[in-house]
Amino acid sequence: MSPQGPVYLRWRAGRPRPEEERFDTLDAALDAVEARWAALQHQAPQILDARRILMLSTAELMGMWEEADAAEGSA
Figure 1 (cartoon, rainbow, N blue to C red):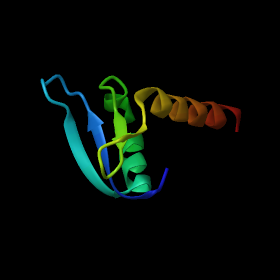
Figure 2: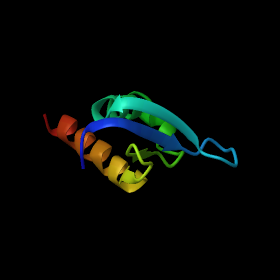
Figure 3: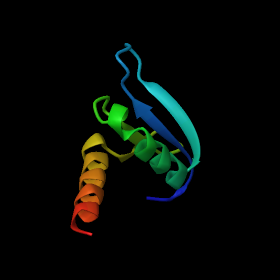
Figure 4: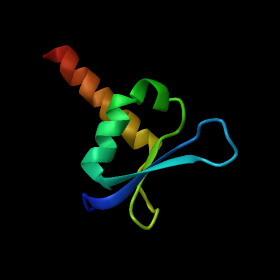
């Protein structure tokens, strides 16, 4: 998995087609997911590579934020 971009954040916002947003790097896409997690967590977010192949699934993103929340709680 390469952190180079572009990468795409895709989510389902209740429309027939998913929404998609382009980012130059994986870090930028993850920052956007983190900033909007409260809304995105219920909209099946995914991170895709430049060819639109899945890099991080909804379950993987949820796991990342659950781990971050657990680490903050134990600090």
